[in-house]
Image 1 (cartoon, one colour):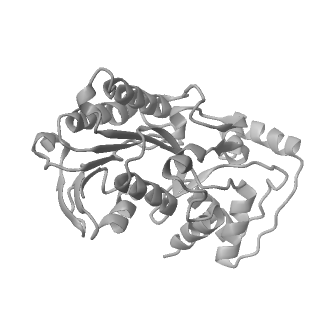
Image 2 (tube, rainbow, N blue to C red):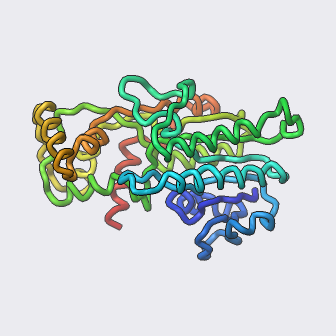
Image 3 (cartoon, one colour):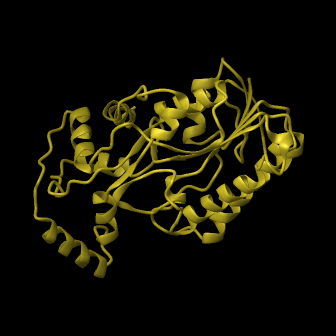
Length: 315
């Protein structure tokens, strides 16, 4: 097939290219026009009208979540919402059959303390990142209505909401945990028993490849590995990969929370916000996408995917 990947120079884009090149004819749309092996041509956004005819559009381009909250809100809506509207409008005018939009679980909820996040949950995003992704979703869903536009019945539109994606080239918070273990510090949060869903880029590519090859029903799909991991489990995985033993401290949570509150008052790196990110539950259900693909398990176990990502940090 002929495939257009927006944001092709990014972390997920580069991994997709590695997986799809040689099997499909690939084009890119990005602000970085540097040549990529296996990609026929890369276009800038001002040249959308001159893009070639393609079979599939994979829309990755977007502004990533700024954990330091330094980005202006308008930047998120300019990139995550307006660029999505622009490329989706183009898709609707073409013969392209499939549109795969990478949204985020943050378009639904900023926190999931006591439940598993499913597609049935009413979206209540918090902050400009999640809000801008949700606005993009709403635009796609409003424009892709086969009842109002029966001529679009042969098109397929997928909105994917992955949990935190990791893999080769990952630049997320896992790097901070990796550095913590590598420096030999004791892990002080062993008393917290949280569970978080992650998405191995290998499982993500498996899902995208299946959506390209099969005519799966259009819709919104959450994406995550089959198993959730605790932060302490990730620390132990990093320790194993580095062959660097780490001491796990089980300090009472109330003491840790008190220290975090002090950190918040004194504007220290360890504060209540950082503690919450490290110890919160955020479990995402992937049952709907697996049922749609008619599979029982994804090819890569969460632990194995995490080990592969950690190993890539030292390459």
